[in-house]
Length: 391
Length: 208
Image (cartoon, rainbow over all chains, first blue to last red; front, side, top):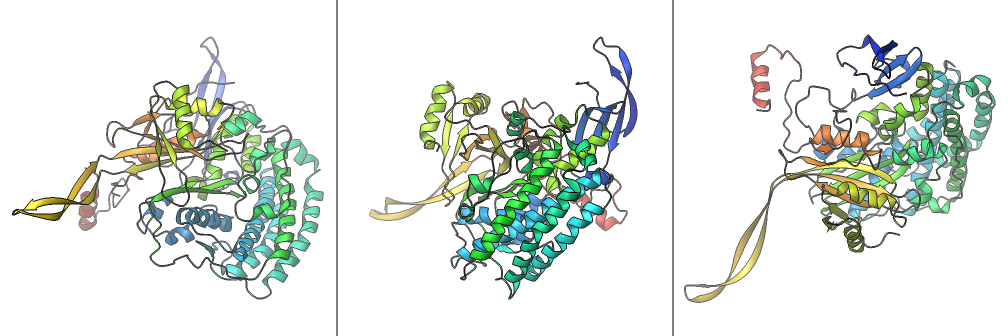
């Protein structure tokens, strides 16, 4: 399956001869640059694909179009100063980005969020997971040609959750809500009732969504046995999140690390059998149902109390020299922040372990031997956001 | 759970003869100390950490580069000295110079045994021409893009990486923008703006 073809960087579209095993020319291969302005690439992302007829023989992802050196900007501002900037990493899930960063700084500075703040964090993170997973299913279906309808169904529900975020944080997407040692503001009056109502209605939407999609013939035909990711490769290539679990590996940081207060909740970790695109779709729907379990319990149990650690300093925040790595189970996978402090007001080193960036490592392995139309679907099932890939 | 790092370091030295392993302490409340390994044996050590049944670090979660500039630490010590025939306590400042280097930090976990993190670090000789470390991609495929990123942004060359190209910056970009002494040019355009003032300022900032 491997064909050695040098891809000239200056050309975007050319015909190159394919070399057979004896060194002779054997038919023709076609080199196509998919992207950066291609609707199925979920942003500005390019794949240099070498095709033999319709079959992919080589694929190289090219990115960096949105690179803004996020890490350097964060190293030249205060710890708190880059909190709003973490929203822009994975702009679909700003609250989980906030949490991952806050968690790492809390490890670095030895802070502990109070009970109520931990509950708020779990509630907002699981709501974010619902938004991400349902919309991803919509985008995936759009890549298969179901233009709009599933996505609009998901967006209808997303809007309700974004209203909740807006009432709590003042912003729909760029929430900038978590602080080191807690949260920024307490829940407004009536917020919990509203959230309970939305969570109670959500299973109905999921049922409706699954009725339309899960046994849909076109979906089955386009996704089953497409883009299979073997178990061993998934571990070795540091794949995380729903993609890893679709390959059958039981590794969910909410269970493994038990960060925050996740050990108080009873939920299962859905696992896939085949590691194909269909499993990745199904895992996300099942994770939504588990998130609803967590949400129901958290919304019932949330205690009253302070929302920020009294030791946390807003001004003059200078953690002791040292380093810390904190990670959470973001909707797209393991989101980690690696921080080194030299005792100053800015982090000496600030590194983001972006799940969608690392999940792209095995894109080529999954696509080889499939058609171009399948490449679009496989990329859709990886669930990337270019704000996070390019940083 | 993993054994304390100094016992682990001894085990590594037994398994990989000649390896230089050193525990790097971490004073922060996170309590995540790390192991400094030498690049000549890094690959063998990585293979040992992955394949040893009681460790099984099969998952390289995070790879990050760090740039440490040349630094001078001043420590003040009180020394008794005889000044003009009288014994006095005098403060003396001792300067310790540390040459700069680049560092690559790997955070390892085990998906099988569900433990971690084990943090290993490799250091380059200096920040200029001795900028090579061993690539661990043949042990953990997940290092592929992350090592490319460290190469791109820090200029660490990974020996044994099959596809070491820039990943975030564009082809033809000259410098390594995450280095602490990187100076950003005023203008990235191929044809600088024709205004003399802007042009002059831009020329001052270009790396010599």
